[in-house]
Length: 168
Image (cartoon, rainbow, N blue to C red):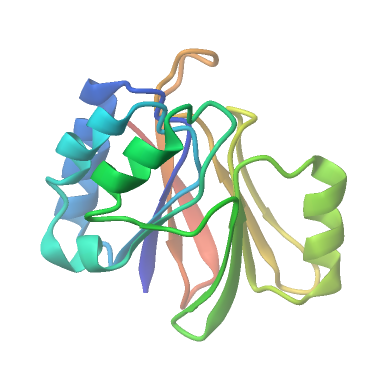
């Protein structure tokens, strides 16, 4: 299974549109947004996802998501918002996703081996790290490109247990 992982879109509609187009072209199976959509109107671009991805579109809130009620009302038509943390299973792999865990928390969760894949955002820095116990940790970086100058998202392959950073 291929899972798109995106974070920190921060209303950058052009980059969201490019990411959605790439995800549709790459025929991913699911999408997890690790927070900081920011405004409810972003649903207009995410609505361009193909139907298979929309059926498996999950998201957590970030610290800059101001109008969570309206965001959930609008984007919630195509995205399964779960609050601040996602704990789920995809393709037999237990996944934890959040926007804002600190590095010590991510490290502790990874070392525990409770989850196979840990996804997070907030830092605007991309990271792919595979622990000795096989746990895969991925931060897709920032789709907006505002802080780092690089607009990125990730694709996680659950069969290979690896990930790829895609520059938008």
